[in-house]
Amino acid sequence: MGKSLIQQARGKGGPVYRSKSFAFAGEVKMRPPSQNKVEGTITDIIKSAGHTAPLLEIKFDDKVTCLIQAPEFMKIGDKIQSGPGSNVSSGNMLRLRDIPEGTPIYNIELQPGDGGKFCRTGGSTARVLAKNDQNITIQLPSKKEKVFNMNCRACIGVIAGGGRKEKPMLKAGTMHFNRRMKNKRWPNPSGAAQNAVDHPFGNKRTSRKARQRSVGHFAPPGRKVGKLWPRQTGRKK
Image (tube, rainbow, N blue to C red):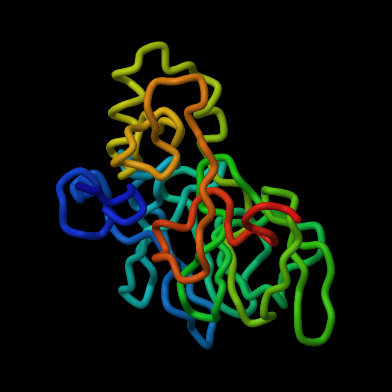
């Protein structure tokens, strides 16, 4: 009897791939866009197990509260600005059209008003490379360059927590709880090391574990692993 792949098992309601909701302090995104400049105050710095960076709790003058990733060198009581006319300083939320070239930014919106989708992990930052009349080019932490809408927003600065990967895990149990808290599967064995019912590459304990099998165009999404629709099949004439 066959068994669903890991990709197919996710989202089916089982307890294995369900993240711990109490590990997240709340929804982390920028406040809704405003037509005028709004100032807020940092009221708390939160350590959230489900996030790789500390979080800032900000209360604005118009009674709006939001959580964002904490940039470096911020403390409780500092002021944060959002909207047109805000200063280009650490933690402030500005439209990309108002950010000078070369400025480090994080928590970049993909669509105007979505609160931030790119560059959100501890220690990461992106950089504004070039502008034109309609779009802006940004270098992401992976060194890939991506074009964004000028009306999208971003936060200024570098996210705190950059040294989190320098500390060794030392024990498998530490890595287990670290990955489990974020709904990540660990350890992640290769397909050849799994049983035949768990993966198309799974096989008997022989020297040739990962015998390649062709996958058709119409296979379900989770089954498309390995040799995808090769150019030629069958015996070569």
